[in-house]
Image 1 (cartoon, one colour):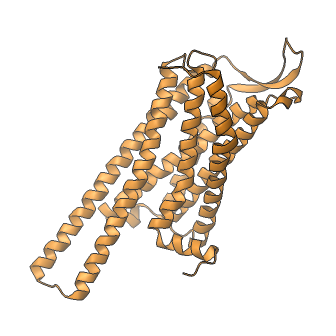
Image 2: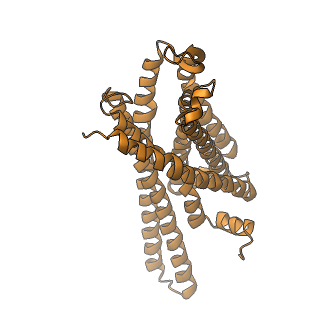
Amino acid sequence: MSTISDEHLLSVMFAYTKVLSPSAQIIAIFANVLNVITFCKIGLRDGVNITFLILSVSDLAFVALDTCQGIASVIAMSPWQKDLPVSMLTIGVIMQYYKYIFLDASTCLETYLAITRCCCVAMPLKFKKIFTFQRTVFINAVILMCNTVFRIPLLSSYYLTWQTNAFTNLTKLTFYPYSHFQILNFIELVVARTVCPLVFLFISTVCSLILARSLIQASLNRKRMTHVTGYHDDVNNGNDHALKAKEIQLVEAVTLVIILSGFLQLVLSLFSLAQAAMPEFFPGMEYGNLHIVITYVVNHLIILHCAYKIGIYYLFNTRFRTIVKMLFHVHV
């Protein structure tokens, strides 16, 4: 494993903090605000729309906190940070733990959507009885609550305190961890950042396979019934082709979401595993500069993941596409 020089690190930090990160954050914030408006206009009587709405709000909260963290980091690296009474680098560190609440909530919601789409096709007669509106709202609330409660021990394992630098004799409000902070942070890396993403990836993959199998089986059954009845008029063929197109579109949409989300979850797991297994893979250690660069790359992938979902909604959701066109006064 090679190290990265301080000169190269400064170039990467400048490109990321001044160009790449702000651009992606602006796009992601705009996309998710548009998602929230669009799903509200579609209507909140449907459980799936509620989940998509909460997912967009969760993504928006993550990007907003990431933006605040980025601003704090830029200020921390600026020359006038030394005159501030607060360590902005400390503020950025604290925001990191809060923004991961919403990242993990979004991952859980995406997995829940994969399960509902799978059940909708695999068990259509029981779907509405099982996934009622009230149950969907309850499950979404539980997902948000569990991700928050899980992090309460970690969030309470540090505090802000006034500390005086012995070299500069300046007193600043600074991050100060308790003795059990490192243990809880290690648990966070192993459970939330390594194990859970792999579990969610496995569930989403299984749901995708079941969904694809159910749709293929339904298509074969319909074709078999067509041959038995010998009914091949133009109307039936037209409906059959239209139905096949919808099925193919659904499989493509689900597969695309799972591939993109699965890739991100796999990257997060590998990165967190490296942090947990290699103590030298931290700032100030042998591979500290490499750790910073990979952190930028992973964080950028997460922001892009929050941003490109609007494209999937637009391509595969007719009602979403219609309302977006209406919002921008495009002829429908």
